[in-house]
Length: 81
Image 1 (cartoon, rainbow, N blue to C red):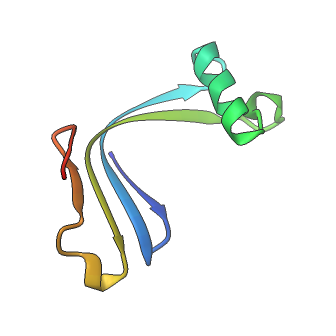
Image 2: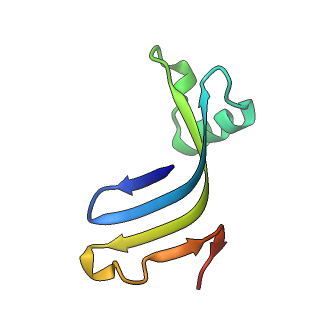
């Protein structure tokens, strides 16, 4: 799975293994931690919600085209630098 955050200029690109949990199947401690961190609990919403846990293997980060070289900051699950 690849996940890019947040936009096309200031980018964090995660590549790794993803696991999806419908709200009724998410581990309670993970859902509680999410709610504590973001001050919002999707379990209280009317619409269905899916939690995604990503175990990153590679992380790239850059701010604009000039930073594309050297953008890999994690490879094979190990932080570089």
